Image 1 (cartoon, helix red, strand yellow):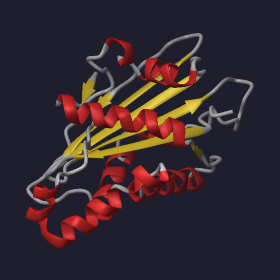
Image 2 (cartoon, rainbow, N blue to C red):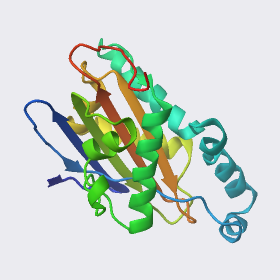
Image 3 (cartoon, rainbow, N blue to C red):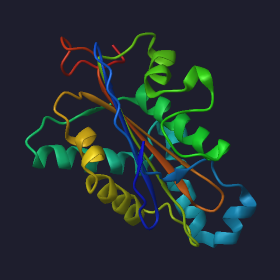
Length: 212
């Protein structure tokens, strides 16, 4: 796995296709794990509480405002490159979010989980959907800093970092992908982790949701 260091974080990309399996990865991480506790929110004051409330949108509505922001940025890039937009899958987003939470909780950043049953993006997909997709790609990112990081501006900077990497950009604008799941986790300090999971269900199911 190649490693590309950014000033505020790391970014990772993974892609495999059947029947031939190919993997290419850069390590780029955005830390997002676990919702902050009340004592941590108090430390950041009213502004921190407001940001935390926005982040927690995923608990009630399946997809948080920051995840929706990334989804919009991804489809904006696809439109500018003449590629059909992706559909946002809530189930796929739950798979992505669980990986972001695991990276936070277990203190790592990457595509390979230390939990054998969830070791690869393909295994994580199959555990939820019961079958293997034709193509699957994954971008991961993490951001940390002395101040609260989970803001719309930092999310956009993370997206720009992904687009600045050829391998991550390939996942974002790859024409074969039909669906995306986006999961963000955040810790008590506002550091966040991002997982973007891209899927093509099969060669014969263009624009068919994996949820169907």
